[in-house]
Length: 162
Image (cartoon, rainbow, N blue to C red; front, side):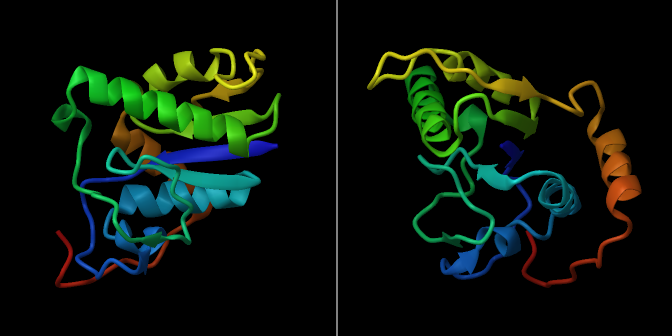
């Protein structure tokens, strides 16, 4: 199984709490293009958001998730806890030997160490193949790559965009 992971962005629409993740972050061109690319190429997609202690599905509602929290807002113990919890959830939703594709910022590489640790409950080793397809590209080049692969997406115009 191929699973794509994208990261939440700073740019967000000021919708109510009961809006889908894909809509909440849609003011970011980077988010929209990376989501469209992942939906085209992978079996399942999840959004990694520091404010959430679980994986966000693009169609799930943003309820009590603090989407404004950034990595620099976390102290070391809280960052470690978040990485451990997210890696456990990935292990639960992705079968062994899945291919994991991370379309995320570089610091998410800290997550890979946790993904290779044995399962906390069973102590069984985990076997994932991890890819960072655009790792060596700057954000602008990544966006250009997505546009070449997907084509032009409709622009988002909303007065409430932040």
